[in-house]
Amino acid sequence: MQLKSKFSLYGPMLVLILLIILPFVISSSYLTHIVTLILLWSFVATAWAYMARFGMVSLGHGVFLGIGAYFPTLMFNYWGVTPWIGIFVGLAVAIGVAAILGYTCFRFGLLGDYFALVTLAVAEVSALVIMALREITGGSLGYTLRSTGRLADMQFADKRVFYFMALILLIGAMYIWRRIDKSPVRLALTAIEESDIAAASLGVSVIRYKMMITLLSAALTALGGSLYAQYVTYVSPDTIAGVGVSLSVCFKAILGGMFAVLGPFVGSAIIVSLEEYVRISLGTSFLGLSQIIFGVSLLLMIIFMPRGIMGSMSMAVAKRLNRISARH
Image 1: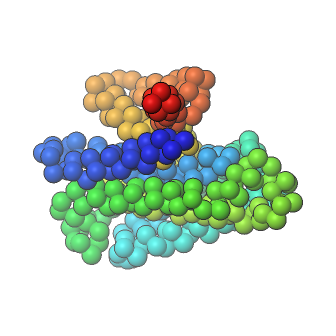
Image 2: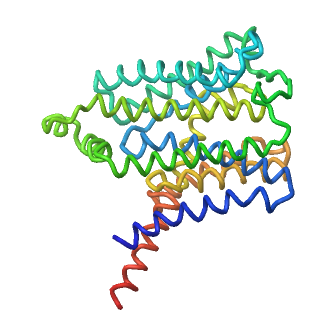
Image 3: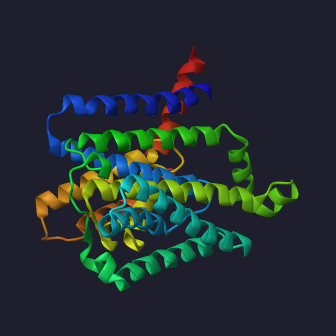
C-alpha cells in the first residue's frame, strides 16, 4: 500500500511538471489551444468526480457550467460588468441553484438512479430556458462575447494566459481532492455511500456532508464554465449547457477513472483529442462520430475496466511493485 501511495502521489506531480513546461517547448499555438481545452475540461470533470466517487452521480452539471458561462458573458455584454466580477455572480447563482436542488433531493431521500434522473431533468430544463430566452441569450445560435482586448475585461493578447489559469485551477482541484482524502470528510462520505441510515445512527450529519461536497462541486464547475466562456468567447446550449454537455463531462471522468486524481485529466485528454481528430479528418461528413466512438468505448470500459484507465493502471502498477518488493 505504501508503494501504491507513492505512485498515486508522484504520478500527478510528474504530469503537472510536464504541463508547466509544455507551453515553453512547443511553438504551435494550435497545440497550446488543444491542451488548454483539455485542462479546462479536466478541471470540470474533476469537480464532477468529487460527488460521483462517493455515489452521487449527477447527470446535470451542465446547469452549473451554463450558469458560470452565461452570467459573466451576458453581464459584460449588456451592462459592461467586467468578467472578473461577473464570475463571482455566476458562482453565487450556481451555489444557490445547487443548494436548492441538493437539499430537495437529499431531504426527500432521492438516491442513486433517482438522483441522477432528477439532475438530468434539471439539465434539460436549463437548456430549454436558454432557448426560451433567445432574445437575451441568443438561443440555439449562441452568443458571442464582446471583444475589447483589455486586461480589465479578462481578454489577453497572449492566449497562454488562459492555459496557465486553467492549469492553476486544475492543480487547485487536485489539491482539494487530496485534502478531502486526508480529512474526516472522506470517511463520512464513504460511510454515507455505504448506508446513510447506518451513518446517521453513528452521528454523521448525512445532509450536511452531502450538501458540502455538492456545493463545492457545483461552484468549481461554474468556475470552469466561466473560464471556458472567456477563453472561447462564445457560449451556446450545445457547447456549455444542457444534457449533452453534462453527459460529456461524465464520460470524461469515467473513462479516465473517477476514483483516481489523474483520471478526469486522462479521460479529457482522450476525448478532446478524439473529437478534434474527427473534426479535422472528417469535417461535417460524420457529425457525432466521436460521441459514438467514446460512447462505445465507455461501455467497454464499464464492463472490462470499471475503475477507468487510471484506476486500473494504478492497481496493476501497485500490485507489480508490491510483488517486486516482496521478493526483496
